[in-house]
Length: 413
View 1: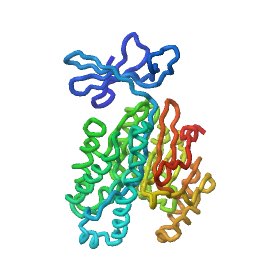
View 2: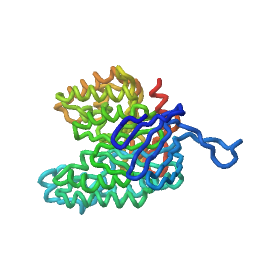
View 3: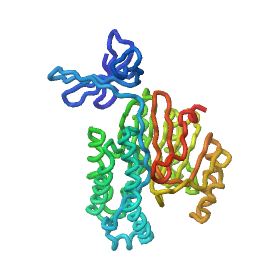
View 4: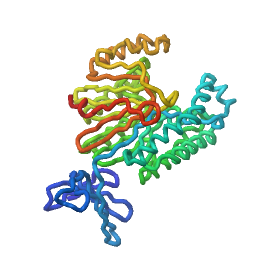
């Protein structure tokens, strides 16, 4: 019995079989995937060899009749990178910058220097993790470039240079979402479409036509969500229905949903007229028990947020170390410390809207079940197994692990 589940995807129930299967059709082939999962023996000694959980894929060429078998294990790890702000001085029309964004000239110098001195060390850490087979995927939450170039040609060159740079270290799929810096400046949005979308298509081995897209690995699904397009919410609502049976769901977005520091207005759907959108998004994330991975704030934050339909986790990260041996600072933990006192992390920030920022934290506190915060730069390695997701938090560079958090245990508390 066939029924259309999504574009290029068909659900199939085979007579005589109790389990459900999925067929993907790509050009001249069909892929039959057990949604099991099933266990496969490792090695040849079937009596004593341990088994590995995963999915069996049968690839059938509909023209030649050839059949290929592949086993995809459930367990895998991936690196979560926050804001990188890749930059070089030659990426900018400085006359335009001085006219349009004069306050950002020092930031351009700062990130250009970090790109030259720190990013190679950081990415070498990631290469070591890949070579040790500890990670098989890189996920980045936007602001992978500094932007502010001034025209299309400089913006596209900046993005191409970023791709060339990362390609020198990373040999596994590298998946990105859109950050505000990536599309800031004339021609930047066009450069994103012309340069980044083809790059993402190569990474996922299928055409990516827009900044919202889905990628599956094992029993986890990654929804790359554009926080700068209101239509993203409707897209995500539809995708959650299509993939409702997937065990673990990660939503990758630049701006966080839940405020975690003094910049409590720097969140998705933060405007007064967007409250309805925000309510829908929060309900959707809770109903599907989502793991949100966010950037934008350049700090570490971990929140368990309850809703009427369930809880979801938001994990925020940053990847722009000030120096290679950077350690965590200003560590705050506990639900009771989620309060207007967070405004004192930046007491001089935006005094005109301090009252509103305080109100948002006060309202949100009623829904917070777990809270962690730290001023930390580095990267996070998430490990996905049959029933658990854990996060190893690394600081600075040099494979310095700060701590490990069992995210599924937090979700289930």
